[in-house]
Image (cartoon, rainbow, N blue to C red; front, side, top):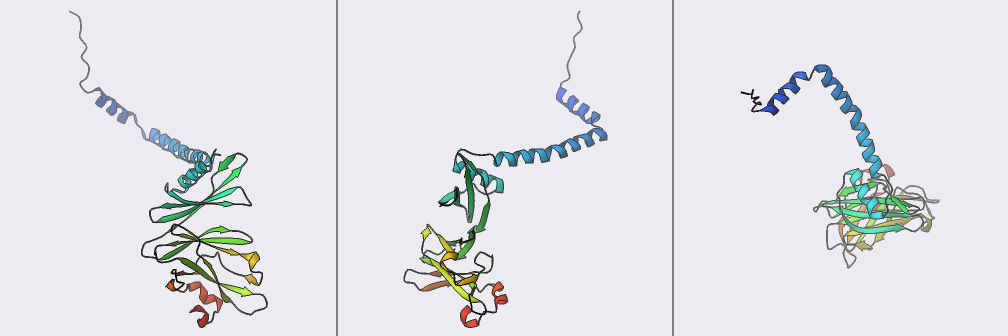
Length: 235
């Protein structure tokens, strides 16, 4: 009669126990070192992959959002810079709005920077600096009040030949959905020698209805205390 070899009823359990028995402290240490070395390499590869040139601007936009961990969001509008081969997308994801820049080199597109702001429903107006250039800058103002038909950005300036800081205003009724774009063109205001238009916390937002009546005004920025403004101007 031949000999019969009966296998173990639980071979995977035996393998698991054997693996535990053979896992020595030295082996655990080597495995931890390999993992520590591999993780930065994988992260670097991911960054390179997301910054790889794309055939379309939308592909570069998706990579920009992925790199910053935003969205993917819904595109509200796209702004083209006529002087450079760049697009700036305004993207919405829930209560968050982001400005995503992508740029073109030859036939390919590359990802750019992303800046975002939370627009809570209880806050009528919030702002985000989306473009800062030598001669003109743009602020995105998101409105949560359907009655607001135009917005105003107020900020301190210094006029040529005039002592002290004064308040200056730029208004806009140009909107896409609930997004207003307020641009300060330095070349159109040569009488102004200094201004903190794009400094966070240095401008004040106002909202007006269709009749031009002021219906919302943000609190006075704390940063204005350093400018020595007259209280009549601040009001």
